[in-house]
Image (cartoon, rainbow, N blue to C red):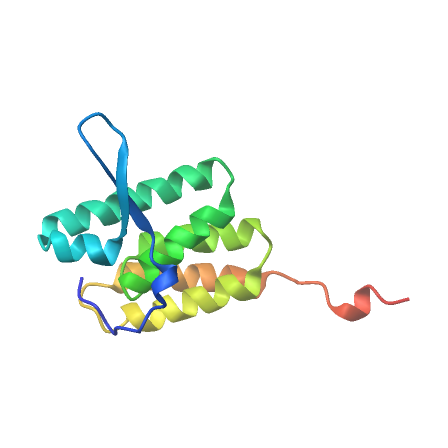
Length: 147
């Protein structure tokens, strides 16, 4: 899938990669941007994205949602919302955390980013269905809790 837009990112928001020697000791750490400059091969870059996503899933399964969200936010911003699997996983975290407003904003942003892409009808339907479920849920109002 192609990128929609490129936003400037803060340098501290970029995950790091630990470079190790043959014995497994950490030699140094570099940012993903530095790593990409060293290894400009697109296949290797995609491999790193896959590893980051697997790491995010690992954190998700361990219920370490803060770390999973950090990695997913990075991947979503890097791909300009064009990889729905990242968006869907982050939306699941927001649902678990009972944050429907964040989930809805995320899904709407993804919807608008994915809409111009070719062959995106199935993904758009999934997003629409999920948005309908959020809208159908009867959230308590502040007056329900007042005495």
